Amino acid sequence: MRHLKAHRKLGRTTEHRMSMLRNLATSLINSREERIVTTLPKAKELRPFVERAITLSCRARSLEGAQAVHLRRQAAGFFHAGNMQQAALTGKRGQLRLPRTAGVAAIKRLFDELGERYKDRPGGYTRILKLGTREGDNAELAIIELVDNPRELEALENARKRAKHSPSKKKKSRDAKVAKASGQAKVAEEADSPAANETVEAAGSQASDSAEEVEKPESQTAEDEAK
Image (cartoon, rainbow, N blue to C red; front, side, top):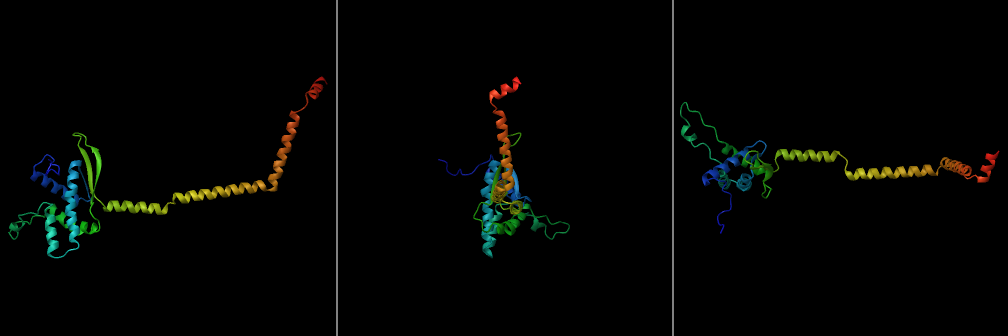
């Protein structure tokens, strides 16, 4: 029976696999373009991992006090902790304070920005796009990105503006039909005019004269040749 085998092992031990997922989640949250490129199995494992942390930040928007702090501490488990040596080096002469790690910055952005963005979205915070295979080891590559990112919203706004300023297909077809109908009406008016009737009569008389010349009797033709 396939019990307790819900996730991919990715050829790593548990500690190595969890550390890798925390690094990928940190890179995704801190990315300027809000997307990273990795292999397809890693992207599929990262998706539920990072979405749990985003869900905690969304729940914390409606809570205050100790409950919000509790959710923040739970979300911190999805990222690497800050520097443990900060407290030991604080206040020592000649020792510079160590910078905070990327995991702390990811937690801050997660609860300050992403929680507000996805507060009304019931899941589905990421998107996976396949890129094909990688040259060399032939591994399947994929892009995992956050949905509703600024780049995507800007593209939608530009498309909306283009659709607003450009005439629609229905309007174009309607204008074409109106122009065609007006052209047909103009042709009909010209055909009903007296000048058009005189032209038609003159053309008909010329056609009849030419037909009479063509249809001369053979006897008359023979007489003309004898003369």
